[in-house]
Image (cartoon, rainbow, N blue to C red; front, side, top):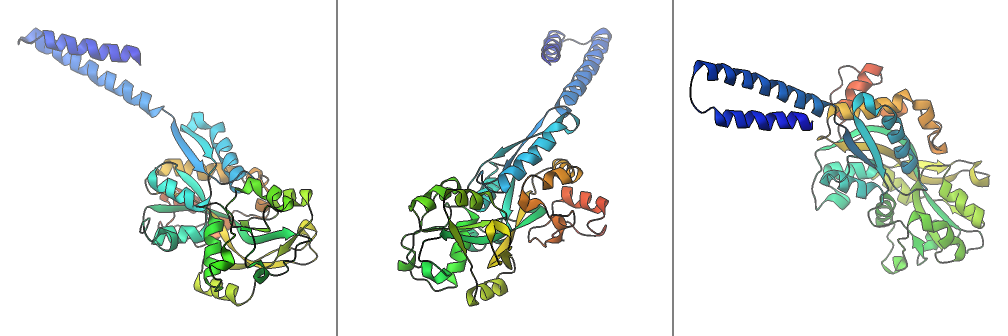
Length: 355
């Protein structure tokens, strides 16, 4: 590259020297012009070989987003000599933070709860002030995430309403869990005094905080089985409290991105399922992202799908069809759509929008 640049500089100097006109000089100018074309071609070829650096926003290290993003990057980076894409992950506060960072260009891709993908694309709820993020694009969906509440076994809290006034950790500011808590509570009629002791600790702090008594409960939207629950059980005896009743019924009817869900029996020693509600984890980017880069990521996941599923128990029951089964509000990115069409997972005539 340095030699090529030296050639360009030398050529410019010769052109400045030959200021007169003669057939000989004209022929030389033509020769120099051809040389510049060759230099330009070589520089263009060098640019074609450059790496494209991309970043995936994930979540806390104890959740599913972080290992999913890390594995996707590992798969992509293994073949970066073929496609020129180099991938890295960034731990974040979760869904809302990831959407904001994609919007501003700080990151390129991110894992986002389906409810906050909906609100971001339409400019509602937490995104009302910013307005619709019309360039938001879906890529694929993953596992379900269930609203989960854990308390110590010896606590007096037996049902959800018992938690009024308790020290509940609802997730950090900008997390999907915190925003979903607010959506739930707005339908329950809790007063401000009922929530005076809400906490916003990091996910990595929760098991110690609950077992030591710093908090009375934590609320998280997580895929199951979850490392957070297992880690907390290893520290102290806990119970999982269900969330059901009229509030959940209304929530599911009014907000199609929520759905009834439960924590299955057999996990964590449960004798029977714990009822709740949930969302779907989705993978998103913006319309600014080139089609070939999106296709590279999607292809990496699908061609290594069995390995991808082994990353976390919450992904173990996924099928290829599950990744395109959920009707996401933001349009499918064309790079993902064409790949899905080639695989026969999406109709060949499907538009570049949510399937």
